[in-house]
Amino acid sequence: MRVKLQLVICHDDGQEETVTDVIALNKNNQRIEHLGLSLAESQQLLGTLQRHLLQQQVNTFLDTHSTCPDCGTPLKLKAHGSRSFRTLFGTFTFQSPRLEPCDCKPHKTASFRPLSALLTEPVAPELLYMESKWSSLVSYGLSLDALKDFLPVDLSLDVKTVRYDTLKVATRLEAELGEEQAGFIEGDPSEWELLPLPEGFFIVGIDGGYVRNWLDKKHNFEVIVGKSMLSFGEGEEDRTPSLKRFGFVQTLDTKPKRRLYEVLQSQDLQMNQAITFLSDGDDTLRALQMEMSPKATPILDGFPRTMTLTV
Image (cartoon, rainbow, N blue to C red; front, top):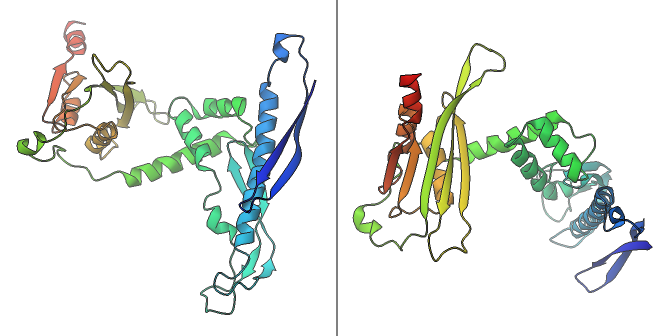
């Protein structure tokens, strides 16, 4: 059986442009492994489809920016160039012409590249998201292996690039984090009574541990990790629980309370909502829970302390 897939692009004016032979497959149907698309075929399909779609979008963008927005005069071409763009489905290179602005108005620059306004970053946001998500769960090397196993990413993608992209995302998120505060209880009891009834209940577990310094084996980092779970009771079985995780290095992080507060806020914590904290008696963990909610109930897990006293 021969399968041929075509891409049809419909323009805003109703005109249709057909891109034929996006992919052609010869499929057998005698064994179970012949059924459907294989992983290699799906990667080829995604890469080819991405290339056609991106090229059409870039061409349309350049066409709309090739004339003066004020008088409609076609802009003069000053130089040719190219621009690469890394995506989940491969790395692609596009023509990036340099144009001269129209003389109908004064301009600050003698030339400009229209594509720079569209490709503000060399990496697609979804690729950055996937790299950061996997790198937060496993090592950079395993993250790279997972991406290459399932997605037609650029084969030249290496561990250093994944690490660089992940750290860039982390730096941006750190810059967006608000200022640290001693407490985050907002309003007063009279205002809390006017809030709508909260949905679900919170349980937050926090614990700490030590991670050996890779460069100096004699020293450790104290790492604090936790999980915030918003659960629902009877009559709300159809509601999916919300799970959020957080972590930081105690000796380096300057905003630990703000970090926990933002996690709770992302789950819509209200000041009239009950929340239970589970942790041991460590002073750092106890201080982290202080002034988060007027309805907070700390529960001390005595097992670690018992082990310290008896072992």
